[in-house]
Length: 370
Ligand SMILES: [Fe+2]
Image 1: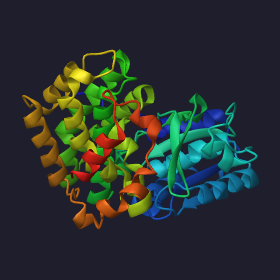
Image 2: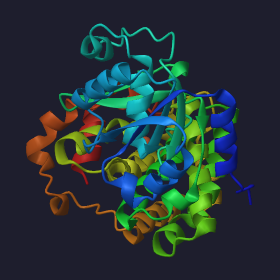
Image 3: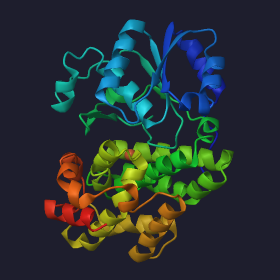
Image 4: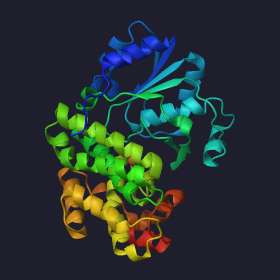
Protein backbone atom coordinates (compact mmCIF):
# COMPACT_ATOMS: atom_id res chain seq x y z
CA UNK A 1 0.00 0.00 0.00
CA UNK A 2 1.06 3.50 -0.79
CA UNK A 3 1.99 5.94 1.93
CA UNK A 4 -1.35 7.28 3.11
CA UNK A 5 0.05 9.78 5.55
CA UNK A 6 -0.78 12.97 3.76
CA UNK A 7 0.60 16.36 4.83
CA UNK A 8 -1.24 17.34 7.97
CA UNK A 9 -2.97 20.46 9.22
CA UNK A 10 0.32 21.36 10.91
CA UNK A 11 2.04 21.50 7.54
CA UNK A 12 -0.72 23.71 6.15
CA UNK A 13 -0.40 25.97 9.21
CA UNK A 14 3.34 26.33 8.76
CA UNK A 15 2.88 27.09 5.05
CA UNK A 16 0.44 29.89 5.91
CA UNK A 17 2.87 31.26 8.46
CA UNK A 18 5.90 31.04 6.21
CA UNK A 19 4.27 32.80 3.26
CA UNK A 20 2.91 35.58 5.50
CA UNK A 21 -0.39 35.93 3.65
CA UNK A 22 -2.19 39.18 4.38
CA UNK A 23 -5.62 38.59 2.91
CA UNK A 24 -7.25 35.24 2.23
CA UNK A 25 -10.43 34.43 0.37
CA UNK A 26 -12.07 31.08 0.73
CA UNK A 27 -14.16 29.68 -2.13
CA UNK A 28 -16.41 26.88 -0.94
CA UNK A 29 -19.69 25.06 -1.56
CA UNK A 30 -22.82 26.65 -0.14
CA UNK A 31 -24.01 23.45 1.59
CA UNK A 32 -20.92 21.24 1.62
CA UNK A 33 -18.84 23.80 3.55
CA UNK A 34 -20.84 23.10 6.69
CA UNK A 35 -21.70 19.45 6.13
CA UNK A 36 -18.14 18.36 5.28
CA UNK A 37 -16.76 19.86 8.47
CA UNK A 38 -14.74 22.31 6.36
CA UNK A 39 -16.28 25.29 8.16
CA UNK A 40 -14.95 24.29 11.59
CA UNK A 41 -11.67 23.21 10.06
CA UNK A 42 -11.12 26.51 8.20
CA UNK A 43 -12.29 28.73 11.03
CA UNK A 44 -9.84 27.10 13.42
CA UNK A 45 -7.05 27.23 10.89
CA UNK A 46 -7.54 30.84 9.86
CA UNK A 47 -8.65 32.48 13.10
CA UNK A 48 -5.74 34.94 13.01
CA UNK A 49 -6.05 35.86 9.31
CA UNK A 50 -8.09 38.46 7.47
CA UNK A 51 -10.57 36.27 5.53
CA UNK A 52 -13.59 36.60 3.27
CA UNK A 53 -15.82 33.83 1.93
CA UNK A 54 -17.49 33.11 -1.39
CA UNK A 55 -20.19 30.43 -1.29
CA UNK A 56 -20.76 28.62 -4.58
CA UNK A 57 -24.43 27.96 -5.35
CA UNK A 58 -24.69 26.58 -8.89
CA UNK A 59 -24.78 22.77 -9.27
CA UNK A 60 -22.12 22.90 -11.98
CA UNK A 61 -19.64 25.67 -12.88
CA UNK A 62 -21.26 28.32 -15.08
CA UNK A 63 -20.13 31.65 -16.48
CA UNK A 64 -22.50 33.83 -14.46
CA UNK A 65 -21.18 32.60 -11.14
CA UNK A 66 -17.58 32.65 -12.40
CA UNK A 67 -17.98 36.37 -13.14
CA UNK A 68 -19.31 36.89 -9.60
CA UNK A 69 -16.23 35.15 -8.22
CA UNK A 70 -13.91 37.29 -10.34
CA UNK A 71 -15.62 40.48 -9.14
CA UNK A 72 -15.38 39.25 -5.57
CA UNK A 73 -11.68 38.56 -6.10
CA UNK A 74 -10.99 42.02 -7.48
CA UNK A 75 -12.88 43.66 -4.64
CA UNK A 76 -11.19 41.63 -1.92
CA UNK A 77 -7.65 41.74 -3.40
CA UNK A 78 -6.38 38.60 -1.64
CA UNK A 79 -2.85 37.27 -1.87
CA UNK A 80 -4.14 33.75 -1.19
CA UNK A 81 -7.20 31.84 -2.38
CA UNK A 82 -8.19 28.65 -0.62
CA UNK A 83 -10.59 26.54 -2.70
CA UNK A 84 -12.19 23.95 -0.45
CA UNK A 85 -14.93 21.80 -1.98
CA UNK A 86 -15.73 19.47 -4.84
CA UNK A 87 -14.54 19.66 -8.45
CA UNK A 88 -16.72 22.67 -9.35
CA UNK A 89 -15.36 24.79 -6.49
CA UNK A 90 -11.78 23.95 -7.46
CA UNK A 91 -12.46 24.63 -11.15
CA UNK A 92 -14.01 28.03 -10.38
CA UNK A 93 -11.01 29.07 -8.30
CA UNK A 94 -8.54 27.86 -10.93
CA UNK A 95 -10.19 29.82 -13.76
CA UNK A 96 -10.97 32.96 -11.74
CA UNK A 97 -7.36 33.12 -10.62
CA UNK A 98 -5.96 33.25 -14.17
CA UNK A 99 -8.68 35.10 -16.09
CA UNK A 100 -9.17 37.87 -13.50
CA UNK A 101 -8.18 40.63 -15.94
CA UNK A 102 -9.90 39.17 -18.96
CA UNK A 103 -11.62 41.86 -21.09
CA UNK A 104 -14.31 39.68 -22.60
CA UNK A 105 -14.26 36.41 -20.74
CA UNK A 106 -17.11 34.75 -22.66
CA UNK A 107 -15.48 35.39 -26.02
CA UNK A 108 -12.04 34.38 -24.79
CA UNK A 109 -13.26 31.08 -23.37
CA UNK A 110 -15.55 30.13 -26.26
CA UNK A 111 -12.85 30.88 -28.85
CA UNK A 112 -9.95 29.68 -26.64
CA UNK A 113 -8.18 33.00 -27.27
CA UNK A 114 -7.39 33.66 -23.60
CA UNK A 115 -3.85 34.49 -22.72
CA UNK A 116 -2.83 33.06 -19.38
CA UNK A 117 0.45 34.45 -18.18
CA UNK A 118 -0.04 35.09 -14.51
CA UNK A 119 -2.02 34.15 -11.44
CA UNK A 120 -3.88 36.73 -9.44
CA UNK A 121 -3.00 35.12 -6.09
CA UNK A 122 -1.51 31.92 -4.72
CA UNK A 123 -4.00 29.05 -4.76
CA UNK A 124 -4.38 26.22 -2.27
CA UNK A 125 -6.79 23.43 -3.28
CA UNK A 126 -8.44 21.24 -0.67
CA UNK A 127 -10.83 18.74 -2.29
CA UNK A 128 -13.78 17.53 -0.22
CA UNK A 129 -14.57 14.74 -2.69
CA UNK A 130 -12.50 11.86 -4.02
CA UNK A 131 -12.77 12.93 -6.80
CA UNK A 132 -12.00 14.78 -9.88
CA UNK A 133 -8.30 15.18 -9.13
CA UNK A 134 -8.83 18.88 -9.94
CA UNK A 135 -6.21 19.72 -7.29
CA UNK A 136 -3.45 18.62 -9.70
CA UNK A 137 -4.84 19.13 -13.21
CA UNK A 138 -3.88 21.98 -15.53
CA UNK A 139 -7.38 22.55 -16.84
CA UNK A 140 -10.82 23.44 -15.55
CA UNK A 141 -14.36 23.12 -16.82
CA UNK A 142 -16.86 25.92 -17.28
CA UNK A 143 -20.34 25.85 -18.90
CA UNK A 144 -21.54 28.72 -21.06
CA UNK A 145 -25.17 28.47 -22.27
CA UNK A 146 -25.15 24.80 -21.26
CA UNK A 147 -22.11 24.05 -23.46
CA UNK A 148 -19.00 22.79 -21.71
CA UNK A 149 -15.66 24.52 -22.28
CA UNK A 150 -12.27 23.70 -20.92
CA UNK A 151 -9.74 26.35 -19.89
CA UNK A 152 -6.24 24.96 -20.14
CA UNK A 153 -2.77 26.08 -19.12
CA UNK A 154 -0.01 25.19 -16.66
CA UNK A 155 -0.86 28.28 -14.57
CA UNK A 156 -4.25 26.74 -13.73
CA UNK A 157 -2.58 24.17 -11.51
CA UNK A 158 -3.03 25.05 -7.85
CA UNK A 159 0.22 26.05 -6.11
CA UNK A 160 -0.44 23.65 -3.25
CA UNK A 161 -2.96 20.96 -2.46
CA UNK A 162 -3.86 19.18 0.75
CA UNK A 163 -5.83 15.96 1.10
CA UNK A 164 -7.76 15.70 4.34
CA UNK A 165 -9.74 12.42 4.36
CA UNK A 166 -11.77 13.61 7.37
CA UNK A 167 -13.44 16.21 5.08
CA UNK A 168 -14.17 13.58 2.41
CA UNK A 169 -15.45 10.73 4.59
CA UNK A 170 -18.64 12.56 5.62
CA UNK A 171 -20.03 13.13 2.10
CA UNK A 172 -23.27 11.33 1.19
CA UNK A 173 -23.08 7.95 -0.49
CA UNK A 174 -24.49 9.50 -3.68
CA UNK A 175 -21.71 12.08 -3.85
CA UNK A 176 -19.06 9.48 -2.98
CA UNK A 177 -20.36 7.14 -5.72
CA UNK A 178 -20.36 9.77 -8.44
CA UNK A 179 -17.04 11.36 -7.49
CA UNK A 180 -15.33 8.00 -6.97
CA UNK A 181 -16.56 6.71 -10.29
CA UNK A 182 -15.19 9.86 -11.95
CA UNK A 183 -11.74 8.91 -10.63
CA UNK A 184 -12.15 5.35 -11.94
CA UNK A 185 -13.31 6.52 -15.37
CA UNK A 186 -10.51 9.08 -15.58
CA UNK A 187 -7.89 6.41 -14.90
CA UNK A 188 -9.45 4.03 -17.46
CA UNK A 189 -9.83 6.69 -20.14
CA UNK A 190 -6.29 7.86 -19.50
CA UNK A 191 -4.96 4.34 -20.10
CA UNK A 192 -6.36 4.23 -23.63
CA UNK A 193 -6.03 7.91 -24.56
CA UNK A 194 -3.96 8.64 -27.66
CA UNK A 195 -1.99 11.18 -25.61
CA UNK A 196 -1.05 8.69 -22.89
CA UNK A 197 2.61 7.96 -22.21
CA UNK A 198 4.67 5.78 -19.88
CA UNK A 199 4.28 8.23 -17.02
CA UNK A 200 0.51 8.66 -17.33
CA UNK A 201 0.08 4.87 -17.59
CA UNK A 202 1.91 4.41 -14.27
CA UNK A 203 -0.33 6.97 -12.55
CA UNK A 204 -3.49 5.47 -14.05
CA UNK A 205 -2.54 1.87 -13.25
CA UNK A 206 -1.78 2.66 -9.62
CA UNK A 207 -4.97 4.70 -9.34
CA UNK A 208 -7.08 1.79 -10.63
CA UNK A 209 -5.38 -0.79 -8.41
CA UNK A 210 -6.38 1.33 -5.42
CA UNK A 211 -9.90 2.34 -6.49
CA UNK A 212 -10.93 -1.18 -7.51
CA UNK A 213 -9.87 -2.38 -4.08
CA UNK A 214 -11.45 0.38 -1.99
CA UNK A 215 -14.31 2.03 -3.92
CA UNK A 216 -17.24 -0.08 -2.66
CA UNK A 217 -15.98 -0.19 0.94
CA UNK A 218 -15.59 3.60 0.77
CA UNK A 219 -19.29 3.80 -0.13
CA UNK A 220 -20.64 1.19 2.25
CA UNK A 221 -18.42 1.38 5.34
CA UNK A 222 -16.31 4.50 5.00
CA UNK A 223 -13.34 4.74 7.32
CA UNK A 224 -9.98 6.49 7.51
CA UNK A 225 -8.18 3.85 5.44
CA UNK A 226 -10.58 3.50 2.49
CA UNK A 227 -11.21 7.25 2.35
CA UNK A 228 -7.47 8.00 2.32
CA UNK A 229 -7.05 5.37 -0.38
CA UNK A 230 -9.76 6.92 -2.56
CA UNK A 231 -8.28 10.42 -2.06
CA UNK A 232 -4.97 9.06 -3.31
CA UNK A 233 -6.58 7.17 -6.20
CA UNK A 234 -8.42 10.32 -7.35
CA UNK A 235 -5.24 12.34 -7.05
CA UNK A 236 -3.28 9.81 -9.15
CA UNK A 237 -6.05 9.75 -11.78
CA UNK A 238 -5.81 13.55 -11.87
CA UNK A 239 -2.06 13.29 -12.51
CA UNK A 240 -2.75 10.74 -15.26
CA UNK A 241 -5.30 12.84 -17.17
CA UNK A 242 -3.19 15.94 -16.71
CA UNK A 243 -0.85 14.21 -19.18
CA UNK A 244 -3.19 12.16 -21.34
CA UNK A 245 -6.51 14.07 -21.13
CA UNK A 246 -9.78 12.12 -21.09
CA UNK A 247 -11.52 10.42 -24.01
CA UNK A 248 -15.01 9.68 -25.35
CA UNK A 249 -17.01 8.89 -22.16
CA UNK A 250 -15.99 12.27 -20.73
CA UNK A 251 -16.58 14.07 -24.04
CA UNK A 252 -20.18 12.87 -24.23
CA UNK A 253 -20.83 13.23 -20.49
CA UNK A 254 -21.17 17.01 -20.37
CA UNK A 255 -24.64 17.36 -21.95
CA UNK A 256 -25.93 14.78 -19.42
CA UNK A 257 -24.87 17.26 -16.74
CA UNK A 258 -25.99 20.50 -18.38
CA UNK A 259 -29.27 19.24 -19.88
CA UNK A 260 -30.38 16.65 -17.33
CA UNK A 261 -28.53 17.79 -14.18
CA UNK A 262 -26.79 14.44 -13.75
CA UNK A 263 -23.70 14.77 -11.57
CA UNK A 264 -20.38 14.53 -13.41
CA UNK A 265 -19.10 11.09 -12.39
CA UNK A 266 -22.55 9.56 -12.83
CA UNK A 267 -22.77 11.17 -16.29
CA UNK A 268 -19.42 9.64 -17.27
CA UNK A 269 -20.54 6.21 -16.05
CA UNK A 270 -23.49 6.19 -18.48
CA UNK A 271 -21.42 5.42 -21.59
CA UNK A 272 -18.10 4.14 -20.23
CA UNK A 273 -18.89 0.46 -20.84
CA UNK A 274 -20.17 1.09 -24.37
CA UNK A 275 -17.08 3.03 -25.43
CA UNK A 276 -14.76 0.46 -23.83
CA UNK A 277 -16.56 -2.25 -25.80
CA UNK A 278 -16.40 -0.26 -29.06
CA UNK A 279 -12.66 0.32 -28.66
CA UNK A 280 -12.03 -3.28 -27.73
CA UNK A 281 -14.00 -4.71 -30.66
CA UNK A 282 -12.37 -2.30 -33.12
CA UNK A 283 -8.86 -2.70 -31.75
CA UNK A 284 -7.47 -3.66 -35.18
CA UNK A 285 -8.47 -0.19 -36.44
CA UNK A 286 -6.78 1.62 -33.56
CA UNK A 287 -4.76 4.65 -34.51
CA UNK A 288 -2.42 5.10 -31.55
CA UNK A 289 1.31 4.68 -30.94
CA UNK A 290 0.93 1.96 -28.28
CA UNK A 291 -0.47 -1.54 -27.99
CA UNK A 292 -4.11 -0.98 -27.09
CA UNK A 293 -4.52 -4.62 -26.05
CA UNK A 294 -1.76 -4.17 -23.50
CA UNK A 295 -3.64 -1.27 -21.93
CA UNK A 296 -6.78 -3.39 -21.62
CA UNK A 297 -4.64 -6.05 -19.95
CA UNK A 298 -3.69 -3.48 -17.30
CA UNK A 299 -7.41 -2.96 -16.58
CA UNK A 300 -8.02 -6.72 -16.43
CA UNK A 301 -5.15 -7.21 -14.02
CA UNK A 302 -6.17 -4.34 -11.73
CA UNK A 303 -9.73 -5.70 -11.55
CA UNK A 304 -8.71 -9.34 -11.27
CA UNK A 305 -10.60 -10.25 -14.41
CA UNK A 306 -9.48 -12.51 -17.24
CA UNK A 307 -10.88 -11.00 -20.41
CA UNK A 308 -13.05 -8.22 -21.76
CA UNK A 309 -16.31 -10.03 -21.09
CA UNK A 310 -15.43 -10.48 -17.39
CA UNK A 311 -14.16 -6.92 -17.13
CA UNK A 312 -17.32 -5.51 -18.71
CA UNK A 313 -19.42 -7.45 -16.18
CA UNK A 314 -17.14 -6.28 -13.36
CA UNK A 315 -17.68 -2.64 -14.34
CA UNK A 316 -21.46 -3.06 -14.70
CA UNK A 317 -21.56 -4.66 -11.30
CA UNK A 318 -19.52 -1.86 -9.78
CA UNK A 319 -22.00 0.71 -11.08
CA UNK A 320 -24.95 -1.32 -9.85
CA UNK A 321 -23.50 -1.73 -6.37
CA UNK A 322 -22.73 1.99 -6.28
CA UNK A 323 -26.40 2.73 -7.16
CA UNK A 324 -25.41 4.65 -10.28
CA UNK A 325 -28.64 4.40 -12.31
CA UNK A 326 -27.81 3.25 -15.81
CA UNK A 327 -31.21 3.30 -17.49
CA UNK A 328 -32.11 6.37 -19.54
CA UNK A 329 -35.83 5.84 -18.91
CA UNK A 330 -35.35 5.85 -15.15
CA UNK A 331 -33.30 9.03 -15.51
CA UNK A 332 -36.11 10.68 -17.53
CA UNK A 333 -33.94 10.85 -20.63
CA UNK A 334 -35.66 10.41 -23.98
CA UNK A 335 -32.59 10.07 -26.16
CA UNK A 336 -34.50 9.32 -29.38
CA UNK A 337 -36.14 12.72 -29.05
CA UNK A 338 -33.20 14.67 -27.58
CA UNK A 339 -30.31 13.27 -29.61
CA UNK A 340 -29.68 16.32 -31.86
CA UNK A 341 -29.74 18.72 -28.94
CA UNK A 342 -27.58 16.32 -26.95
CA UNK A 343 -24.93 15.82 -29.60
CA UNK A 344 -24.50 19.57 -30.19
CA UNK A 345 -23.18 19.79 -26.63
CA UNK A 346 -20.46 17.18 -27.16
CA UNK A 347 -16.83 18.21 -27.05
CA UNK A 348 -15.41 17.05 -30.38
CA UNK A 349 -11.82 17.82 -29.35
CA UNK A 350 -11.90 15.18 -26.61
CA UNK A 351 -13.28 12.63 -29.06
CA UNK A 352 -10.06 12.90 -31.03
CA UNK A 353 -8.20 11.34 -28.06
CA UNK A 354 -10.15 8.13 -28.54
CA UNK A 355 -7.79 5.38 -29.76
CA UNK A 356 -10.22 4.28 -32.48
CA UNK A 357 -11.68 6.91 -34.77
CA UNK A 358 -15.31 7.66 -33.90
CA UNK A 359 -17.63 8.62 -36.74
CA UNK A 360 -20.88 10.43 -36.05
CA UNK A 361 -22.73 7.22 -36.92
CA UNK A 362 -20.69 5.25 -34.32
CA UNK A 363 -21.50 7.87 -31.71
CA UNK A 364 -25.18 7.68 -32.54
CA UNK A 365 -25.16 3.87 -32.35
CA UNK A 366 -23.30 3.85 -29.05
CA UNK A 367 -25.54 6.41 -27.37
CA UNK A 368 -28.86 5.18 -28.77
CA UNK A 369 -28.09 1.50 -28.19
CA UNK A 370 -28.12 1.95 -24.43
FE1 LIG B 1 -14.04 13.78 -14.72
